[in-house]
Image 1 (cartoon, rainbow, N blue to C red):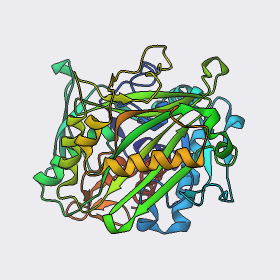
Image 2: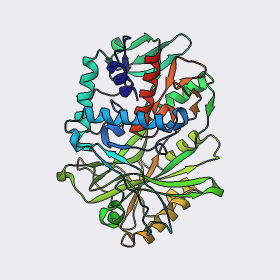
Image 3: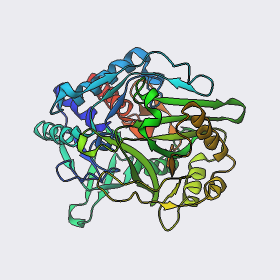
Image 4: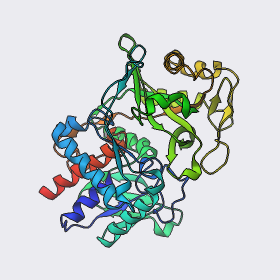
Length: 422
């Protein structure tokens, strides 16, 4: 979000000083496995699929309308092309028709997706960073913001070297933390008693199987989205973030706990003919959903890592050639107990996939949990995403419940446009 905001400001001759503070490393020093912190966030460092529809990734059109939302997402996509070493490699898939073999058991959301290419993301990050530095942006890497005084417009950021710790004033603040910073956003919301909108629980598993079982659907929709709703229970499920061909499960660590995601390589040298995707369950009506999710995730940890279950398979390897960190369990009981009564819905989802994809049978495994922590969303001015209580503080990205690269970047661009108007 903030990288796109800064780009928009520089492109339009913004005369103010731009400072970006990040607890991660700059893209020249950031390691491939350092997914959760650093420039371009997690998705821009390890995934690279840009969803292209207003119904995916949050409620962008709620703030600005569908037409403006699409225009903002176009700008994000153009930025990725602009700093891409091979922009002609960026391709868009746009499936149209829902196949009949899916309909008896699942809905299938079809929408365009721009594929940037995982193998190019790190070069994009470096090129983009160099552009911003040349444009006068001042970066402070490996600094963790620990306090923001909204009343006095001041923040404090610390790092390992106390002499380099930062205390600075601001006129306008764009609060664009990623997943690793949403707990801090929640603390600020509570401290300043910000009006908020509660969000549902989003928790599930990362499913992995040989690609051949899903090829019939992949040929129609590369990043397919299977979904199902249980309206009377307040539960809905969807598959998301599908990775194919050279697909690897990735370990994330948030709040000291393990969870799982996925990514895919384009280089044929990494091809493993596997597919992985999340099966994410959204549950509404849970009191204190953020705390509930944290508690469930802790129950799904053994010896400091998450769990793996498969009827027939063993845990796979990461793209670096080491075994994915997970404790294999022989029964689903441990998982079901932690998620009850909700794991039943995930189990039914898998059982019905076996009907739709008959060769799948027991040739699959799940890494548990995959979780999207959605803290209560602060109420904002729809015209510029500024807090209703502090009009010079703008919440964007994960701090405003954006899910994914495109929507986060669009939110940052939207704020930048409002700053340019003023």
